[in-house]
Image 1: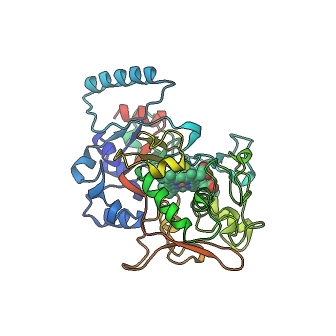
Image 2: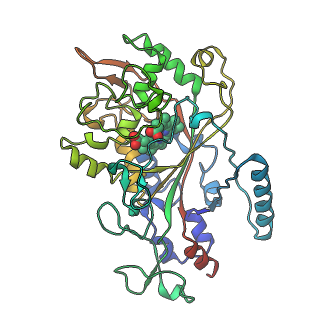
Image 3: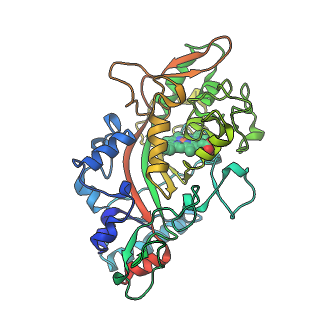
Length: 416
Ligand code: HEM
């Protein structure tokens, strides 16, 4: 269970404690400079603006969202039972359910466009041994109270020790007279991202006619950076290789510096440029490690076609069903992790020397002046190929940040 900024206030944390949380977690009305700035930073303007959201898009609804409760069960029957138990608790504890989100079961861990997702995840140092070392990240990037990639403790919210009479919270380093609310907790970004499956593939179909040598699958793979099977195109640029479907052991600097295989503007290369963001590969990895996310999204809405068949997607009339991804990202520093990736890597049309090229999947095109066009280019010999990207096919339909507390912090809150 995670708590919103308004939730902390409703749970009667003192103003000083609430104020000590990450500034990017603070909430004020949408008219306030802090919120206006956040909307611009994240590209939540135009078609992504709060007036088009299904929840959290106006101040009243937002202030009523206090908790995010995520229920997981092994099958529908167990989930139903779990929901019923909680519904009874809501009555007992005078809680009101303001929104309910159902997720869908997606075959082969795919998202709605048909690409396998959730392959590239950072792993926490000391927790696992199976990933390449550049993907093993210090715990403090994802959990407060532990050393991070700067070898320091992340900023953690705190409470005056006078507010912890039962001595439940741990002490906080370098802050005499205060206790640590954040330790073993973290921040969760929750965004509802609606996907236009037919629009996306129809755009790609049209774009194949603007370039030579690309069919739907290959152009889609260039845009994402992985084939729909999940195989990374930097390793198999011409044909899919399903044997590499879950491969995450690759970099770009040595074998794909200029993006001839995986374009620099591909979704996965810009959301984690690995060793190719700076001239020096080692420095680049150190930099990229400070901007990682633990993604835990879940798709919602009925599949457009059962088997992701591209011909069927292109011929079937639009069904008007809302579908997409409940994007969930865990990070210890909202500004340096989620916000940075979204603003500086995904939305920025000038990412790594590109020009007018925001992410084709998610770029809000806010970095491009009105009337100018956006593009996606694929470096190639003797000359690059480029397609026009007239609009985005993923739109924000709700967004809010939450704090996921430790058990100790929950116990402290219960005793306030
Ligand atoms: C509906 C929205 C989205 C879709 C359909 C989508 C799709 C994908 C797919 C298919 C992959 C490749 C699978 C993998 O490497 O795990 C991927 C990777 C990734 N995406 Fe997204 N994504 C979405 C939203 C976002 C957002 C909002 C962010 C962050 C701001 C993001 C950040 C990433 C990152 C960091 C990776 C892993 C890159 C790597 O380490 O190589 N994605 N996404």
